[in-house]
Length: 308
Ligand SMILES: Cc1cc2nc3c(=O)[nH]c(=O)nc-3n(C[C@H](O)[C@H](O)[C@H](O)COP(=O)(O)O)c2cc1C
Image 1 (cartoon, protein in one colour):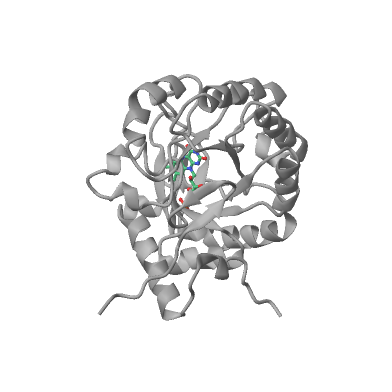
Image 2: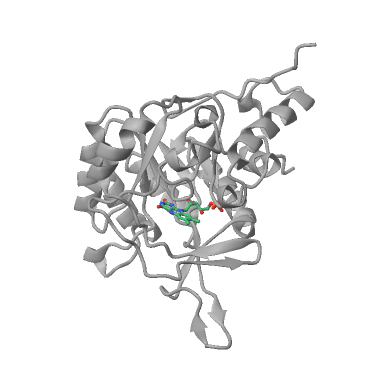
């Protein structure tokens, strides 16, 4: 008997994906690290570690601490830098079929723009994901992503540099995420991804010292999922661009929550540390759900939340 299948394809902001499951930046390296564990060609898209203009060694250790239902990290955006990425990592990534999304961050608007220019001219990169959860050193260190005007300014400047698909990754460390979402869409974002990590802190009571050398870190994993689902649902009602849901997705049913809340695709982060095959298990689980519920196409799930 032929096994029934479902159509998991999705088209978001000009990107054609064979399924809605992507890797989340910073949790999947530059993908080559997972080549023996995951059939990378089965992924919907690959998002690589956040890149800066120059290489960065990140923060001093300890940089990761486990928390109830999650982890706190202060890696400090360690990465090889855009030039080494293009010369050393991209040749392998170009051999893969899923669209490649390059995540970038800068310390000021000019750095974001220069990174975007580097990427615009390079073949084999389908989209840019702009991480705006970083401090603007020219504005007293306030993160771009927590101020609607700063978020608008950086994204409109980046938009002028790129014709590739522009995804903006939102910070959850704000009072009203819909305000930031509207600002970056007005600035030219084609798509939004949310959420990045929530700022947190863990203390060792014996030493009375923070467990992370950086004192604070970013909370990720299942602990943040209800917050992320709520924010995706709010943003989906506020803007009309597609949304990529992120935050504590460990299983297919977690992913389906985000799709029902209004996401067109999802990213898997912390789950990769627990189960390196999590992305593939989630793809299979979504397909099984669709077959069981006689759902032919993925768009019949997106944004179908019933509240009445
Ligand atoms: C160790 C680690 C490193 C991360 N590095 C980045 C990064 O470089 N750029 C970025 O935009 N997000 C980064 N993130 C955030 C994730 O991409 C994701 O938004 C967040 O962890 C929430 O998803 P999750 O709960 O599935 O992990 C990182 C997260 C972790 C845990």
